[in-house]
Image (cartoon, rainbow, N blue to C red; front, side, top):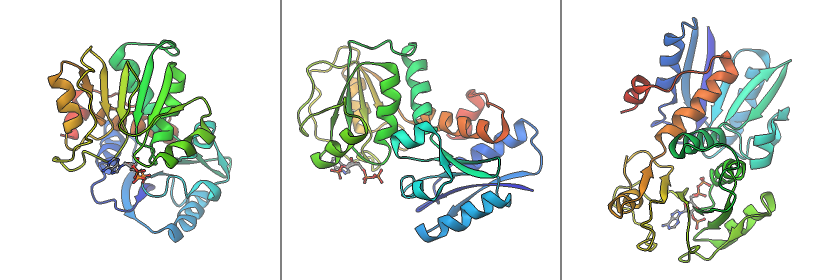
Length: 268
Ligand code: ATR
């Protein structure tokens, strides 16, 4: 039996097993199973050893280990090194390699939603809220699309630290915003509880901007609801989640699963 894992803490709510096991069945990849496991930092080495020995085929890594796993890997692919964030692990020529498909999930979703190709936003402003674990993947993805990137975080120091990885970004004070933006992305955890409010004033952003919230449960955060009511385009994190999983699946099986209505319904 080929075994795959998603490791994190907490992990109970992860939908990754449902998704990957559905794809194993759909694409007739036999004797493969994907499970979730709640772990502590000290358990990471043992899991990587098992991947090295072939007892585990591959893994996804989620909060809070996406950064702390970096030094334990044999090699990092460029997106993982440049974002300092790993969400996918695979084995190649006996080495255990870390990569990042979160950025690709976001990149693919933005391109599909706005019907754009790479580097098509060179003169547009993009506003990112938050500077948590996933934010570097979002910046990395947006850099490929082009545009001037602004980042704002309640704790400004954390946004400043992102400048070490991405010197071109512009940091702005929490509560302030760039004059006009094409895309506004919420990467904070505000909205995970349905009543959460960011308390930022976007009332003058009503010009068909795209508001993107990485949160997909609840489906519509207050951030998205208010944007929709002002007439903006909105999208939640569901497609990004599906695509990051699909790209991970491709690393392990060489098959790129289709993102169709059936798989979207599976997550409903
Ligand atoms: P991660 O594990 O992803 O790094 P995190 O560091 O807790 O998670 O990041 C969560 C993000 O949501 C941070 O940008 C955090 O802002 P701070 O750096 O100031 O903590 C943001 N966040 C959480 N609660 C918030 C709130 N009530 N208002 C504004 N931002 C908030």
